[in-house]
Image (tube, rainbow, N blue to C red; front, side):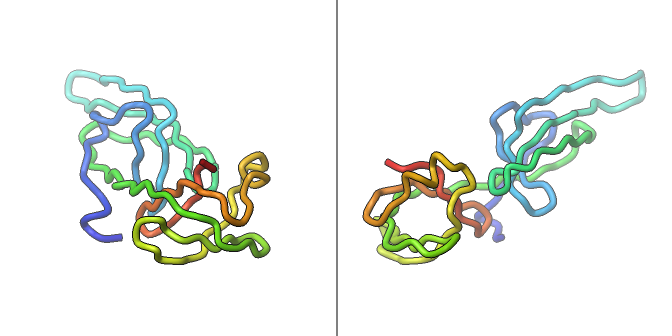
Length: 134
């Protein structure tokens, strides 16, 4: 993870649909509740977040002025070269680089992936995930 892969954001500025980095994983903010506490207290943000790579869900509660990191997600197109077990070899259509990525956990997406099809994959903080078949 480099400086170019992330941008800072305060917890109070986060909205539903934002992507944040929590415990070195990329999470999608599903819902957020902001509340102000007493006279000398700080605003609190309670977020329900979902890991975009594993699908696991969790809830965090942090002060509103906490600095979070938001990943820069690179959305790219690729072509499937070959299938093998739980991984797939793909070639980026812009750079022609070939690499392996994990097959998606979603069964309906997994069934559409075949050799020769075009896919969209996301590259975030050095991890890749196949998002859809074109």
